[in-house]
Image 1 (cartoon, one colour):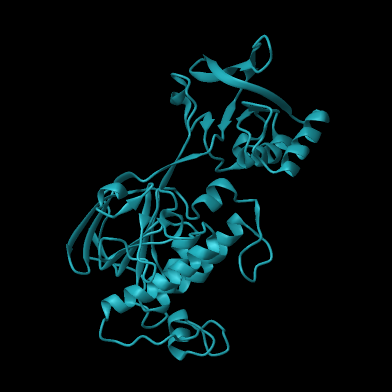
Image 2 (cartoon, helix red, strand yellow; image 1 turned 90 degrees about the vertical axis):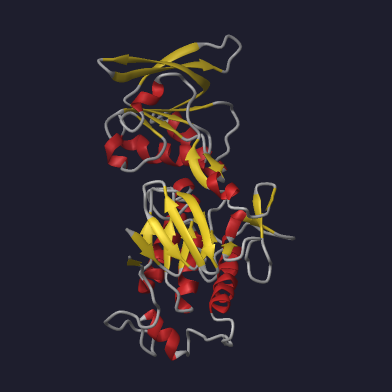
Length: 362
């Protein structure tokens, strides 16, 4: 099955999601592809519970709240969301004619492509202990999908960043035991989180060790303990009982097939025309952290601005003989129709008109 849509957006982070909104206002449909199993990119993968303070008109929200609100905002345009898969192939067949294939066989026919992949597709940095990988997704985890799964268990958390400490603090109260092991005495997490974890450890609710994982033991096919070399003068060896091993060493960005699409790159980033955010390949655009230009700032709000300009540029490229006038969502009947709201901003029943939203299989 081949899915037809106006634009394929590669990346379901906040900038990729907002791009759906800006395209929808222009009457263009979109499908979104992302390697992660959920929308949100770094916001939901790295700091879902951490506060963000620099979103205009939103004094404070968490990463997850930002993504939840963006998903609500783009709902009127019914984008196709294709998660847990990567774009493996891209063929430019003609002007405004691309064929895209993903790692699980999904195919798209589209008129333009927008790369909003942050620093590329993210994969967890894995532990380097031979043989331990067989416990992945049963006792070895690189993300927490359901905190309740870990309740009542001996938990060992590896890492010293925000994700490691945030999850340690959240999981410790319901755990049988929880030990956080960082490679050094230097943490990369917020100072407040470090202070909270230390206070929890002082009260006996958790343990903190400095060391490096160097082995494990199993019993009856199950991971039973993990071994560490501590960072003391004697490099003391310790063994900890474990039911669940949670690893938060960060995510490794990979450009992957993007590097093979013929776009001009500068230090692993995509160069663009600053007026349109089009890359060196006509019809392929790049927004957010994946692109580079003079005075580039890697901020979410900058990515939102780029998404708006890219949407206008794509609409103009599709309709070069049409004069595009800026229409405001506060007053434009056409914008209200596409958003599915009435003149006072209330929701109306039925499908928003003229948005061409969604995708159709061929």
